[in-house]
Image 1 (spheres, rainbow, N blue to C red):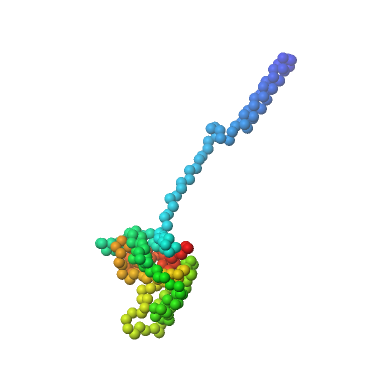
Image 2: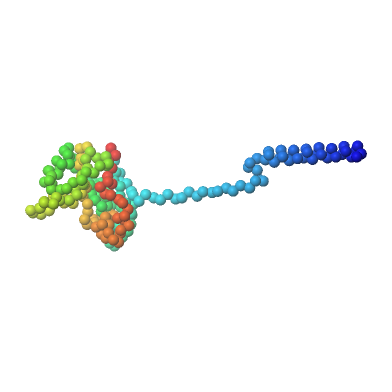
Length: 215
């Protein structure tokens, strides 16, 4: 083989080697975010939060919070219809009306709940159930009259009272409404039509546990 031709082959080999090395260096040095590399960006949508089915009435004067349904059956000028609760709620003269669900009378009382029942002639006539977890000093549910109790004349004392709470020097007497009174106020659907308005009964709202004392 001629000497010049051999030198040419060696030169070509060197050039090819340099090109190969440069090519490897070029591709290994490409940034990961190079436009040459296609990337797929996923966009995650944030779901709209579902609003709570409950509202809370706060009374700073008595340090009391009362939970009640956001929607339900209201009394309107046209009769019963579905609507927003909380349009007839507030405190006046030591009484809190919670729509047509119940009313709370706040009475100064330094004794116990048992003392109050005795003062009303109801010390031994009701079955009672203790209510816990409200932040009150005491809480009871008047479940119903005892089996052997009979009223000689008229109605038994505390006829419409369902719950009593003692907090500090006050007693809170919770009476339910058997008949709606406030226009725009929500009503217990059990009183109106428990079948037609079953979805509001199925919400799981428990009146006796809707009271929270925050002070």
